Amino acid sequence: MSIAAIIIKPEDKQFYVPVSTEAFFERCWIPGIKELELEITSYFYSPGIDVDENQFPELTNELILLKEWAKRNLTENESSHLVSRVDKLLEEMTVAFKEKEVIIYIG
Image 1: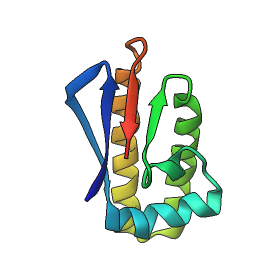
Image 2: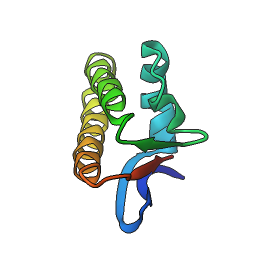
Image 3: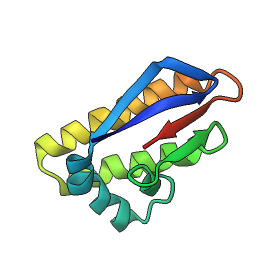
Image 4: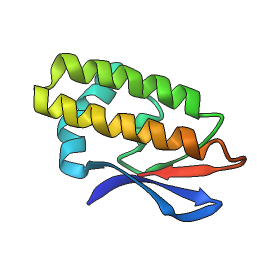
């Protein structure tokens, strides 16, 4: 299984951003999420979360903190992989939220 971001409103079958495999998420994301006490990001794994443009600034802050944590606490390969996925997610969500009333499910 894997964790990805998809637009659920309005439905957009072209928007798909891979975030992490479950194994990598458990090994590399969850320790940082717990240590940093991140709220929105903690729902990526289970049960998943709907994110709208109002939550995007807070999510962006959480993901920036997680990237910094990864650079300090993970191996170079793990950190590089996590950072690249976070960067791609933020890039794609920034474009998606230019449209009004977009809701993105991450899970």
